[in-house]
Image (cartoon, rainbow, N blue to C red):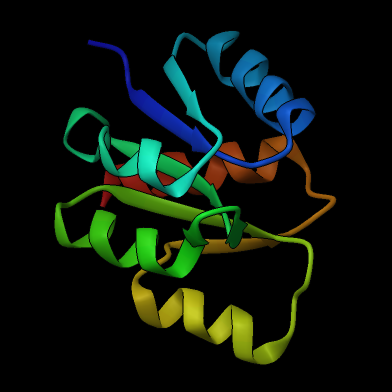
Length: 116
């Protein structure tokens, strides 16, 4: 069975880049451009890559909800303040990456989180 990944990111180009990368590694990938669309799919995935700032909610809120359902959560942020990064980790993020990020590092973090 392939890993089910949800990418929650407001920027379409980043969603497309992440989708292509993970699909190329055999993962089953869906994407959502908003907090609300992501909430509807929380129970259908193994892992989520989420941007901290979404048009209709915060990534930290989604991390908290996903983590409570056993989903491995990796967050992306373009505004890496100490407060924001701490908020994401306290909400349950397995890893947090600053934009721009390296795809392989996000992949490695998800792999590690799924093995725990």
